[in-house]
Every structure is written in structure tokens, then in C-alpha cells.
Image 1: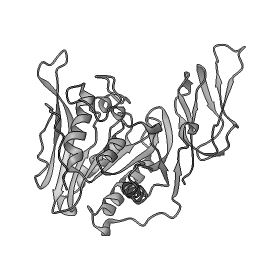
Image 2: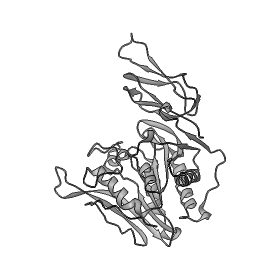
Image 3: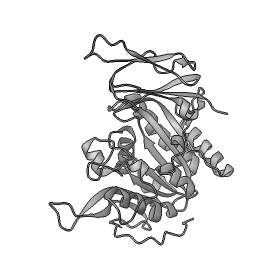
Image 4: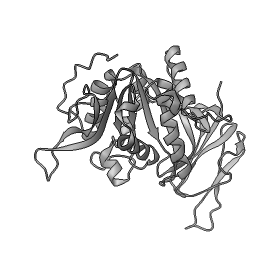
Length: 339
């Protein structure tokens, strides 16, 4: 059931009708007046597929422009899914941070804003802030569930996983867990982004939506295996939510594990400027205090490498992709059993 839309005024508008049955492909238009265009708009692609009665589900990709598997899978759904196959409504947005998507960058090259740190947005702010504000004010109130499809991007390579967005509401938290488990990735991980409230999933939870995310590989490439996980996982969740028929469900895997990131201790950060050498492969079991990697200063051979250490027991879940680091860069991420 639709919830009341925000009273914040906005000049953004849609070229599709959210209430029309069938399939429409169009744009969210964000007024944008750069140096070379007096009365132009930024066009954020959006598709609506609606049929019968059922829940409304928003699928977001391209939150960061260097994360590829989710957007590819969403675009395939837009082209291939027939309205007669569903009960309810899908709002599909494969390239929300559209300028970053076109540039293959994490953040928007237009305003330098990280889309996933811009919620609830500002309807009279920058392009990114206007886009996030429209999603919060106009789209979240229409929806029952939200799928936010991420990968590790250019800087991290992460084990493919479904992400549980924690919620203070115990009922919603359980619904989020069930949705993430329905995605049926090899791993399911609880991630709260260090408690940051400015993410798309945190905002969706505040709006009362069943919310889940993904991390689907990364390293600035398209992973064949992670893309397959995304394709089947999206359909699994839509079956779980009642949008797709149970006849399309895939037999669940039997080896699913639920992990969580143990707060700030999950992360190994670079301490000096240099080149990072990890000491372990993905999935390696590690212990707090043991060496995690070395940072080499190859332009000063007299200087020995600086050793960094794990802060938590657990499994190596994410590794930095570029070798070059500077102080504060995230080099490694550790996850441990949930609960």
C-alpha cells in the first residue's frame, strides 16, 4: 500500500506513469543547467512493469558507477520480463548515479557526491542530492520492498554475498533477513556501513521497506559467477515477495552462511603511503593481532615495509584491488559468524 509522499517540493519529474499497467521505459528528469546547457536535464533511466495486484518493489543499480553486475541484471529484466509474468509492480532503476555510471566512477563527476552517502537528499541541491531526494520523497512511499545491488567497485574485491540491512524494528529486521536469505548467495552478511544513516538501504528501512542489498564481486570488472548469482538471486527474491510465481523459483543452495562485520574491527586500514601486499586469499580464516599485510615504499629501498594487522577473528571477506594505497585506505575486510 502506498504511503504518503513527502511535502518537500521538487522540480524533478518522471516521463513514466507509476500507475499505468504494462511496461514503460523512460527517465527520471533532474533539472540540470551546466555551462553548455541552459535548460537541460539529467536523465536517470527508470522502467515500470506492472500487472494485477501485489507488492511494489524498487530495484536499484548503479548507485556507484563502477559496480556492474547489478545494473546488467536489472537491464536484462527490463528487456526480458513480460508484464503478464508478474503480480504487482516493479520500479527498475539500473543507473541511478547516471553520470558516475557513464564515467565508470564511484562518485558523480558532475558534483563529486557519493550517491550512497546522500540520503535523504535535498530536492534543491546538486544533481545527486535531487535524485536521492526524489527517491525518498516520491518512490519509497510507493513501495513495499527495496533491492540495492552493489559490487566492490574498482577499489575492493568482495566475496559475492547478499547483504542484510539491520533495523531497530524487530519485525522489519526479520523480514530483511528472510529477503536476503531468499536471494540465496553463497554468503549472507549483516552490514550497517559503520552506522551511517545516509545510505539508500538505511533510508529505505526508515521508510519501512523490506530492504536487502548485495556485494557481487568487484575489482572494476564483471564477474561471470557473480552475475549469475545476481540473475538468479533477483528472481528468487521476487518469488519470495510474491511478485513472481513460485514456479520460477530455483532450488536453494545448502551451504549458505550468515556473517556480520564486527564494527570498526572489521577493517584493516593503510597506515602509510605505499604499495599494499596482502598476506592471505579470500575466505582465509584469520585471527586478531596476526599480520594481515605489508605496505612497501619501493621508491625508498632503505625503508622496510610497514606491517598491518587484523583487528578481529573471522574470515577474509574483502580485499583492496589497487595495490597503491595512502593512509586511511581500506585494505582488507573481515567478517565473522552472525549472532
